[in-house]
Length: 221
Image 1 (cartoon, one colour):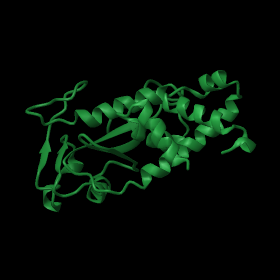
Image 2 (cartoon, rainbow, N blue to C red):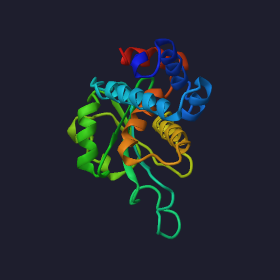
Image 3 (tube, helix red, strand yellow):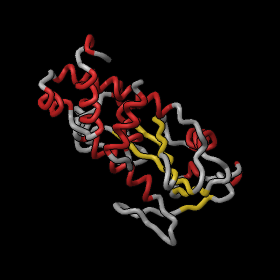
Image 4 (tube, rainbow, N blue to C red):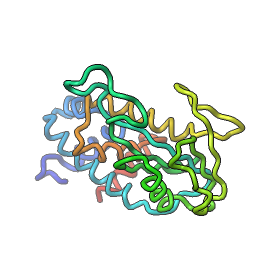
């Protein structure tokens, strides 16, 4: 990404800062006097670099690890009366999340939230010595049988998460809230770019603008 492709190194660095600060493409275009099309093109390149980096993080998650699923999509479907159903059984896109307390978060778009689907991801990403915390969803039944001897479960009372004696999944629930708030500003994210935005949220969560800017520069080298 050099001057031939539309931006000088100086302007590219400024645009990276704007992206790290979570300025929208419209805001950045106005600040830098460039078209929104140009800014969107760079923002897409940034998101692709971020997603590629996030996908390469293959270290097993350890310590205390929270597991949960969430659902993404329009509140209302075109041509359908009323709002779409929330939670399990909805027509929205399911996403599985794993949060390592004090560390990373991992997300995966999944076809369903059945036991075989989720437990395959758990065994692939979570070390067996981890303390695993989940809600009571049946997909988490039998984790002890496959090596997760320290599996703690909670009950969730909507709209808040139940917590008792430090056993909770508030961390991953907080990530879901953060992600959904961010995505609402785009007024709908097409399925083709949903994973890019999801991985961006995964990368952004809990980091300062300075850290985001520094990391993004290394991804683009």
